[in-house]
Amino acid sequence: MLAPRRKVLFVTSFHPGASGYIGAGEAISVETLRRLRDEGAQVDVLAIAPRYQRKNAAADSWCNSYTEVPASRWTALAGLFRHVFSGAALAPWFFTRTSPRAVAALKVAIEQHQPTELWIDFPSSLGFARHAERLPVHYFVHDVVSQKVVRSPLKRLLFPWVQKVEASLLSKVKRCYLLSEKDEQLLRHLQFGGSAEVWGVQGLGVGEVDGARSITSVLAQFGPGPNLVFFGNMGRPENSRSITHFALFKWRRIRRVFPDAQLWVIGLAPGLFLRVLGKLVPGVKVTGAVDDPTPAFQAATLCVAPLLFGAGVKIKVLQMLEAGATVVSTPVGAEGIEPTSRLVVVDDSEISERVVTDLQALNHVSPKPFQQVH
Image (tube, rainbow, N blue to C red):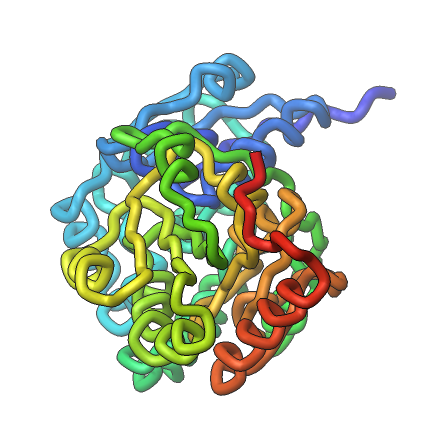
């Protein structure tokens, strides 16, 4: 007798494989959706997604249905207000998609499609676990939020409450899917009693970003000296604050030894302060979004990931390594990634010295070590 077909209601905070203003999570999400399709599941998507994104036509075609509910600052506030007694006041990150309209859309989808399981993608939708109506809940863990909070200088005072709320929501989850074994250990620390499976990173693709600059025009400005590359969504504070710290407090040491070195900060949404740094700090070049960062990784003398806080596997580091680059990273940047000879992990206090040492070694072994790679 054939087993009944899985019917998945896939609730996500962003469009899987979206275009527009996007990060690495959307690429992972679309690969998760692809995997569910390939496993033979019927998938109905409920995307509570911001208007600055557009859905992926291919992903839409894989699904039995695809419902969009617009997300904005106002709907986020409505979601927080509705769940204030569930912990949203002190741990808002789990409830920013759970507006009354989105919860109503969830209930309609459950009634119409009669799913056998509820799938939650992204922490900002984890609050929907409270509205699962006895369905088994599956959750793809992009980040363990309490770990991210405890590492943030501005948010760590909230850690006990965030940890409590995250543990409470996870108690309603039957199964978690993880990017690394490290995240499984963190879940067990939160007393997660369900099953956990490490899927790893499913997708390293780069999506289409609106207004992106041609990477060819960036490479044309690479200098004859060392070219260091950092990549990330600068709208995320772990990226913008970390590279700002590096530019202000680490870069000067590198430039003293290599006066013609350039630091290329590539990625969408650089803030005003970071853009000003790109004008005032010698050698720092802030490009904004590019159509494809991979050629920059390949052309870089070194890539850097000087992250000071954050959680989860850093997709940017995996993308750099996949492109063949050597990456000098802090432990936070390398977290959850399999060791390799091209991933150099050092503490923040040592990162400038290690970059200098590695550049000197390259200079020693190659008469023209800093030529642009075409």
